[in-house]
Length: 274
Image (cartoon, rainbow, N blue to C red):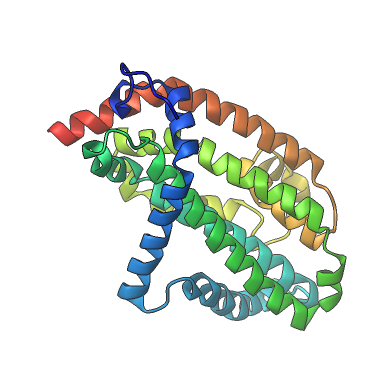
């Protein structure tokens, strides 16, 4: 792609130009994603198997215990928890990764032709691949406990939901990176923040348990992010309300990304120079 001589460097591009550059470098981002997988495999010995095993262990142990504690029928609760936990774990890992995105972006300052967004795209690749593996692990568990649910899943609605969820993640990656870099104290409290969101979002419990305080669910954007991919599997439905919330989040994320692009770029450069 031809770039004007005045903005061929990342530090001189505007938001839209950098997005176009990012699109042309999607294969490079994929190679960086594969390099991350190879590094993780060298360190842990698991690689892509890690998210798969993680879901199997958490769902079989934690899901069974929570089902017994809440006196839920395991035939319906385990599938609900398996899908919910898989999606939530993917989201929380993505947010944790993005909180250090600016540090990753600083590594590429010596390569001015590379998009400043490329580390965000690599994290998105990580998110999608890991989430798919977690969903596969969940389906294996569901197939043993409630095989009818696997056959009744609305796969079209699930595909749409997964696409929307992925778009929300990448659209909000820059604003999240900016906030966590601007207020670095938040990184220290990120596990507590994620745990609090985890508790108030219907993951460990079904949404109908809060009928008297339904606003906690309805106005919880994380609930809708989980629901877009969960409802097609659990209820075989199109979660239209959650789709609409995701569209709004995508638009807001793009607007914030465009507004914060310059400030975030300056933050990366100034911290690198310091």
